[in-house]
Length: 291
Image 1 (cartoon, rainbow, N blue to C red):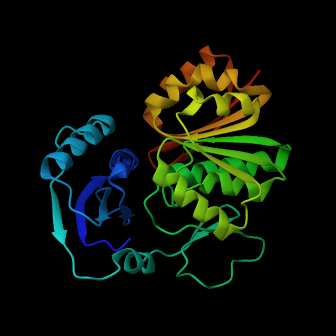
Image 2 (cartoon, rainbow, N blue to C red; image 1 turned 180 degrees about the vertical axis):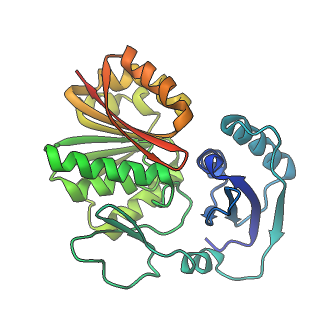
């Protein structure tokens, strides 16, 4: 994408995930910077076409409601020179480590550290470059599970860029079904599968979650991954239990530490028990087991 407009604003760190999810349909490339001492994060969305001000304000209002922000942040929408701003922004993104995983953009050509599992993920239109605490928490959980047990069939619900599906395929000799209701995300994920050499292990599906008959028929799953948001995680608790194999595990992320109790209670009511949790900054990743 040759982006010619940039939507810029500054967010509390805890709100980044919600804003990425809500602005994803604009089909742009999202770039975030590091937190400042006040916990604020610079957030930029590079776009080929400028959205109407009413649309920006509508999405801001939705994202603020989800992130529990009283006043929408000030923003700017600037026309940019004819430069590949996605490529330029990628140059400023160093590789990051999440346990054994190294997540890098294509601009990083240095060899991975010995023993590292390399994942190539460029900033793109799909959510999930591995740089958010929610994704990193899932990667840490996957590695710990891989030390203890084999897994044959995995469902990545809301797969976005496919980073978690690819990570699972690197850890186990398994089959992974990656599902997302956003067609551009599926296209980006397909490109990432090729770049990471896991096309044969991962099947991608554009569908409406557990409502899709193909998702239901492929189970039950040994492991379900869901890095979404707290409310949809709660709504799918019964479906997760229904399509999880006995003794199977689910990794839930996209929730704040303050939302742990709400999500855990919903899954406990569905018959799952909490195994462990990972906390990175304000974000939690939960691992639960079907009894």
